[in-house]
Image (tube, rainbow, N blue to C red; front, side, top):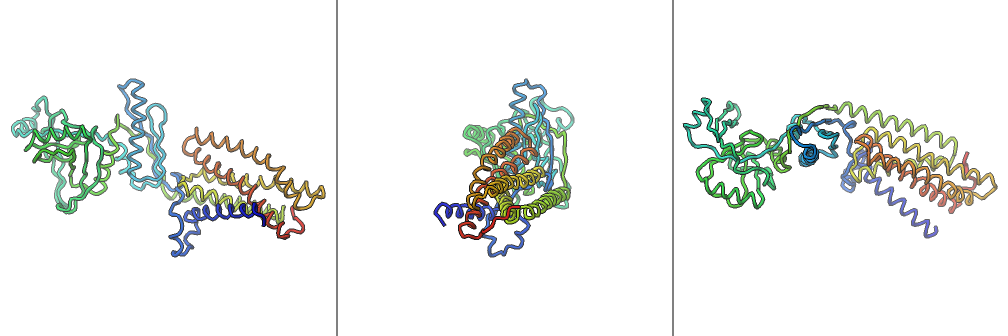
Length: 458
């Protein structure tokens, strides 16, 4: 084996081995892999899109009424990024979040199994305010009778008692003007209060400017209560025991862990610049997704079987090599998708099916060129060499134009179209590699070892 051929063999084996290892955890054969070997394989898997594994499809409208056109377009874009940050913190794999028109946002959340929680998380305006509570009991009584002082507002805090006890609505008289808002918030996370039955609470931290304001407010109002208000709802109203100089605090409210986590997410991601309403809400069930997967894979398998049988019958040994390259082609596609944790959609399965046909088409061009060379009484080695050389430019030209089209679909298309484009791009590159490099290397190995005395090519 010459040095150049040896390096080609090493390259091919390396590509197949690495991408095969990435593809295996996403394949149905993974369950047959012994546990003693599984820890050696990559943990990354192919993400399934909304149409394959189920999930949520939302179209949101940002209320930009009253804004000038310029601010209405900064508002929608900001809302999109804030929603993206919230969903990223929520932990949805490969969500689709994109602007549609002037004031609409498309949101697709594959695999979400708690739609109500997701909607609540996305739709919260998250306006956080810290307001002083009036300690004048007579003013509160008058407010309950309808006489609210001009600088104050009447709010109710929901007290969540222990299990088995009724909720209570506690009236509070708050100053209308907030002492501090969430605009200065830089961090929010869930912590556990071990002294209170391991209850979760939300710890928060202000930036330098917010810390100064918070220190001043707490320092000048020791003994008073400071209400923590989110989107008009009072979550807690702790008593200020002392000046808080470090710009940090906590929100308690007998939360569940999920409630505390979601509150921390919306606070950390920031407030939406305008209210958001849901125009369309569709949930794709997992059963529909499983049917889509089954149907798509069935179509690919049937198409693949027909191609494999045809190639073997029509091209003999060369057809077998083309089928081997086709198998490598599928392994490479799945491996690349898993490596980059790309999202596979139903149109993406169509892209794989199309790639299978294109991969075989490249081999057909090569085989027909080889056949022409053999008819000219050339040796098998010379016919194979010339066949690949003459078919090379044709294959590159045909695939390059398709590659440019697929790239345009990816950069300018929407979710499903981009899913098709991704698998098509990967498939084109993989088919060029397998058709031009893999099959030719196998031919060279067989010819070098004198395994081919007579080439069967139809």
